[in-house]
Every structure is written in C-alpha cells, then in structure tokens.
Length: 304
Image (cartoon, rainbow, N blue to C red; front, side, top):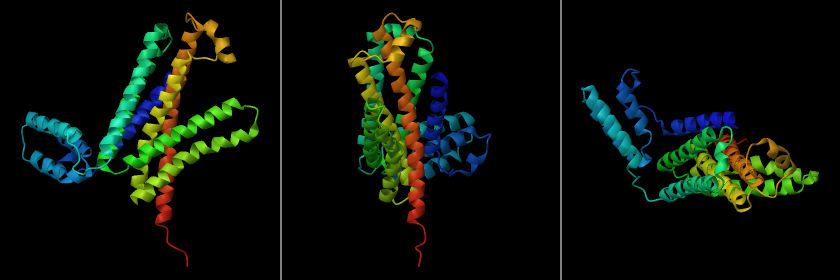
C-alpha cells in the first residue's frame, strides 16, 4: 500500500498547488531567477476573488523593492496575508472549510485512538510511512478545499456532493459485499462513477462555468474521502475489526501481530486509508470530466 499512497499524495498535492496558481500579474515574476517575485505570484493565487486588487497592489509594491532580503520578507508576508485574510463576501465558504478541517481532525483522532488501543499496529511493516503519507494527504485535501472556497462559490455544492458520493460508496459497498453471488447487485457499481459525474454537472449548472464544476468536484472529493474514512474507521474500532473474513484468518498467523483483533484493526484501517485516497482521486477526476462535458453542452450551438 505504501507505493500507492505515495503516488496519490503527490497527485493530491499537485492538484492543491495548481488550484492556488493564478496568472502572474507582475512582469518580473516571469524571471526564473527572481524567486521572491515567483513566490509572490504564487501567493496571489491564494487570494479570494474579491481581493484581486490586493494582488495587483502587492505586485506593484514589490517592483519598488530592490534589496533581495527585503523582497523575500515582503513576499513571505504577502503569502501569510493571502492565506489568513478572509474574503469580503459572506457565504458558506467558512462553514465548508470548518467542516472539512473538523473531518480531517476526526480522521487523525480516530487513527490515534486506534494506535493507542492497539499499539502493536505500529510494529507492522510500512506503518510509519503510511501514517506520514496519510497525514500529508489530509493536510493537502484540507488546504485544497480552503483555496477553492476562497476563490469560488463552489463550497456548498461540493460539500453536499461529497456527502452524497460517500453515501453511494457505502451503500454500494455494503450491498455488493453482502450479496456477492447476486449478479443483479453488481449493476449498482455503476453508481460509483455516476455520483461524481452528477456533482461535476451540478457544479457547472449552478456556477455557469466548467471551472465552477471542477472546483465543486475537488471539494466533493475531499469531503467524500474523509467521510468514507470516518465511517469505515469507526466501524473497525467499534467492532475490533470483526467479523473476520477468511482472508484475515488465513493471513493472521504470518502477520507477527499478537492477536486477531490487532491484525484486523490494522488491516481495516489500512483499507480505510486506501479507500480515502481512491474515493477522493476518482471523485475529483470523474467529477472534472462531468463538469467539462456539461460546460461544453451548455455552450454547444443549437441545431436548426
């Protein structure tokens, strides 16, 4: 699981960085040697849409600063301001960011409780790299959400869509696992891609642009992944990983862990982490596809 986690965290952080980047407003920012100007251009990308004039003022001020140390100090100060200064408009953005941050804290809290309740999990192979990557993913998803809701009004759609996508994953998973021999239930798997497609389309229709739909998809990806982890991790800790399936019973003697409950909790927490990454990644990608298709359909010329 470690390789999968590492690849997906790089993808999540790359998405977060791309969301924060805006077109450079200072001519000097195109100079690859002028690192302070490049940092400032990157910081301006974090400003809310209704603070755009602040970015222009920052870029203009930097042009009049010649000493390199002062340029660095100014750019770092602008980055701090861009991250901390709230938007002027009153909308649901703060609520969405607060809920996502609380969900991320809940994910961390459940994991810490599991490690304290079953400390032998820490002796498992690759546990520490997986935990570090898990924490970085949560931080990246939370930061991405904060950036998006500051720059658009996609937070409410993304929040509702993320909860809906997580619910679809849970319902489909429970149904298919409970009825593995019933081919009819396998059709429910189609709901997994349809849910994020719907979120992307809804975000585009409400925001009137494909960008709004893609922003909603990214927020819903963070929400869906965290909600899914919270549900699965809570179930694993409450039931001590039970009931145990045949695969767990077969692999436990070779795990090196002291008891079956510890092994099952470790296995289930790892599965929950993997599903967080899988659900958030697929939701973001498929949702973006839905947003792009819907945007093109909206702007397609009407046939005679």
